[in-house]
Length: 189
Image (cartoon, rainbow, N blue to C red):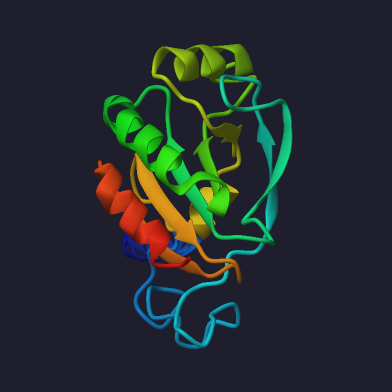
């Protein structure tokens, strides 16, 4: 009897772990992974299509209280995924500011936190963090992490570039220079 319970437990854990990997986009190649074989949302170029969704924006320097569609329908979109608890995200802010200044309105440039606004952090706390770290562009919240999952976010900070057709062209975690960010953005212009 114990052996059956052990086997059932291991099988259950494997199923749950596999489902979590699939939901996070960390599946093997060809099953929603990076080559998108058989993925109905994949483009002809082998990149995933990011379905548009609405992100709530926050009143802060360079930002406004409201909503924005990500990705934009009229131009490429750059998304920086961050957390107010994340020291590398603070380190990334100067390069983001420089990159934003250099690309201007040619792209929708937005930073998005996946923190649960109203539960783990308030909009006022995000705005205060934004001000303290010289944010000067659109900032929003994705408390369900749905956009983060669509952009293959695996750590913080993560930068992602989505072209005007909605195809995810680049997504990479870690700290990047302004030159690296601008190069990835300009590759889709």
